[in-house]
Length: 119
Image 1 (tube, rainbow, N blue to C red):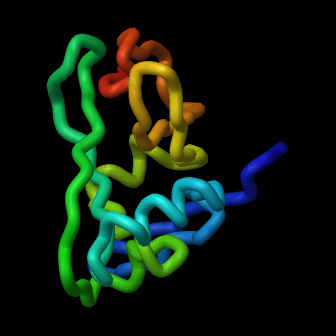
Image 2: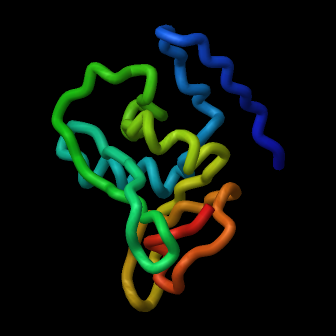
């Protein structure tokens, strides 16, 4: 399965996030809608964790950031785009618990719990 995406940036111009840059599974969308309380889920990346970077999840009630809105539920931090391009987000239920899992093709390493990654 390939991802068709390209980015062309001109200084001072904004661009629309291609909806195929990040794929949400139906389970992930259903879970996000169930916890968003009618708002949106946010995804960012920050330095830290045992592998170098970690995903930061949150919720917001309103957004005007439509270029970074994915499937009408996920708002992606613009600074996180380069770290999660081509990723698939799924909602996983395991014996130890349930969580949003990011399958990130740009990641070169990750920790055992899956909350941090390296590039």
